[in-house]
Length: 338
Ligand code: HEC
Ligand code: HEC
Ligand code: HEC
Image (cartoon, rainbow, N blue to C red; front, side, top):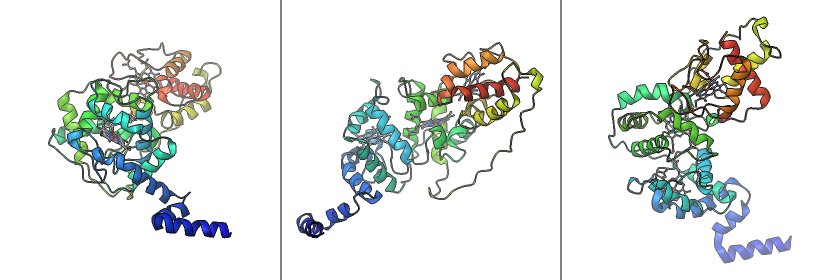
C-alpha cells in the first residue's frame, strides 16, 4: 500500500498530472486515445492535424472513417496487400508509414484516436456529373455501401461519407486498374474490383461526384432504411431435388444467400441477376450444366474469368462459408432454377 502511494506521489512529482492520468486509466479506452494522439504525430504531416486529409499529398481524410476499416487498411499496408504497385504513388507513400505502428496495440490506439476526431466536410472539386453518378451508384454501389453511403461492416464495405471526390475517384481507378485489391488474400479489395471493372474515367468522376453529394448526417444518428419485403419461402417439389438435398437445406440456403454468403450483393435478391452477376432463376447457365453438383462446385471455386460480367466471383464469394453452408446455398440456387 505505502509503496503504491509512494509510487504515485513520485510519478506525480516527476512527470506531471497528464502521465498520472494516463497511468491511472492504463487499461481503459481513454488511455488508448491518449497514446493514439501521440502516435498520430507521425500521421498528421500528411493526413492533417484533424485528420481531414491533404489532396496535394494524396492523403485521404481519416476523421469520419469506420474504425474497423481504418484498422483493416493499416493491417493491409503492413502486410503489403496495399501500396504494392509501382504506379500507386499514394499507396507507396503510405505503406512505409504503417510500419511506424509497431504492434496491434499501436494500431488500436491510433484507430481509437482517429475515431475521436470529428468528420470534416469533404471537398467536391467538381469532377463529374452527380446526377449521372446517382444512377450508377444505385445500381452498382448501394448494395454494399448502402443508399446513404454509410457502408456495411458485414460486407467489409466502408462508409464513403468522409471522403473527398478526388480520393474516391483515385481509389476507383486503382481498383479498376488492379493497382489495389489484386494481391492474393485481399478478399475485401477483390470484391471492390468487380463493380468498377468496366468503368470509364468519366463514369468514375460522375459516381465520385455523387458520393460527395450524399447528405452527411451526424454519424450517431441512425437512419432506419426501409427493410426489403421478406422473401417467400422456398417453393420446390421435393421430388425434383437430387438425392441428399432437402427443402430444409434450400431454405437454409436462402438465408445464406441473403446473409453471410453475400450472394445477393451481386446476384440481387432472389437471385434475379444484375449488372455484376447473372440471373440464377432462368435455367440458363454459363458455367454449369444446372446439375446440383456443378452448382455446388461453382460456389466452391468461384468464377475467376466471367464470360458476360465485369469483375469476378471469388471462391465461396470470398466468405468463410463451411462445406455444409456451400451445400445449402447450392440447394437454394438449384431450387431457384426449377
Ligand atoms: C507521407 C505521407 C503519409 C503519412 C506520414 C501517413 N500517411 Fe496514411 N496515407 C497517405 C496516402 C498518400 C494515402 C492514400 C493511399 C492511396 O491512395 O491508396 C494514405 C492512406 C491511409 C489510410 C487508408 C485510408 C482509406 O480511406 O482507405 C489509412 C487508414 C492511413 N493512411 C492511416 C495513416 C496513419 C494511421 C498514419 C500514421 C501512423 C499515416 N497514415 C501516415 C499518406 C501518409
Ligand atoms: C460487392 C460489394 C461492393 C460493391 C458493389 C461496391 N463496393 Fe466499394 N468497397 C467494397 C469493399 C469490401 C471495400 C473495401 C475494399 C478494401 O479493403 O480495399 C470497398 C471500398 C471502396 C472504396 C475505398 C474507400 C477508401 O477509403 O479507400 C471506395 C471509394 C468505394 N468502395 C466506392 C464504391 C463505389 C463508388 C461503388 C459503385 C461503383 C462500390 N464501391 C461498389 C464493397 C463494394
Ligand atoms: C462479386 C460478385 C459476386 C458474388 C458476391 C457472387 N457471385 Fe456468383 N457469379 C458472379 C459472376 C461474375 C459470375 C459469372 C458470370 C459470367 O460468367 O458472366 C457468377 C456465377 C455464378 C454461378 C454460375 C451461373 C451460371 O450461369 O453458370 C453460380 C451458381 C453462382 N454465381 C452462385 C453464387 C452464390 C451461391 C454466391 C454466394 C455464395 C455468389 N454466386 C456470389 C458474381 C458474384
